[in-house]
Image (tube, rainbow, N blue to C red; front, side):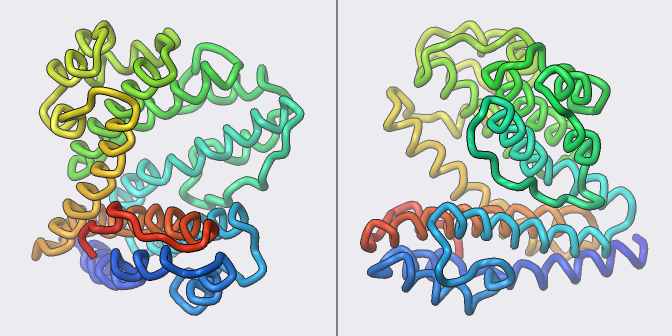
Amino acid sequence: MSARWVAGTVRARAMAHRRIGAGGARALAASPSLEDALATLSASPYGHDVRTGQTLAEAQRAVGDTLLWNLRVFAGWLPPDGGRQLRLLAGWFEIANVEELLRGAAGGPAAAPFRLGALATVAPRLAAAGSPAELRRVLAASPWGDPGGEAPADVVPALRLAWAERVAGGVPPARPWALAGGALLVARELFVAGRPLPAVAEATARRLLGRAATTATTPAGFAAVLPRPAREALAGVTDPPSLWRAEARWWTRLDSDAAALLRRPRFTADPVVGAVGAAAADAWRVCAALECAARGGQELEVFDAVA
């Protein structure tokens, strides 16, 4: 145990308090308008980036910016191994940056990239990529690996499954989340989009979930051959609507597991990973709550996660 693990654990528990929780998200979702919700949220820990007058998309992006800002500050308190694990967990933001680059290359509106700082894996080189071909070359020379193509349909599934595999192998407390999240992604591609996985993504899915998972022809058959954490996440999935409910349960399970990790009385990676999981789950709830408020306010059962 090092002094930096002690400091990181203390900071992790402090960061976990910078949430609005399930109750706060439920109240936010019931706001009569987006502007009312933003007024509430701007006075919360999300006020670092959330402002009144933002559109729904701007506000949801601002929630992500706040989460990333907290993770960047948090990283400075951790020893090298903790920083490495946090960088792996923050991979979602780098994938989001790649998606925006691809959208811009196709002529669509692209948001500004998330600023990852020390949490970046290839961010500076990504920003300099002037075409999808260059982007692929940058990824191929990085820990993300070659996505196997230049089109979003090749790149995005490959990166998301690569992220799940990297987290499963490099962040032991988060392995169950990565397995279940990877399984949900594969199920969405196979049974909702109705398309086979691209070659690179399929190879990663085989390593992560087993060969039988990539050849299943029904949701039930898919769930039956998955590793236990993933199998539990897919329980009861028979059609696209039930897959959506499974994804909501994944976030609830993430929040519950994160709370358990935070309660462990050890100066190790457990409370650190727990703090990141809890913060991510809270940000997801807040984004969903803002969408509810933008529709005039409603309550959703997905906010019944651990507060």
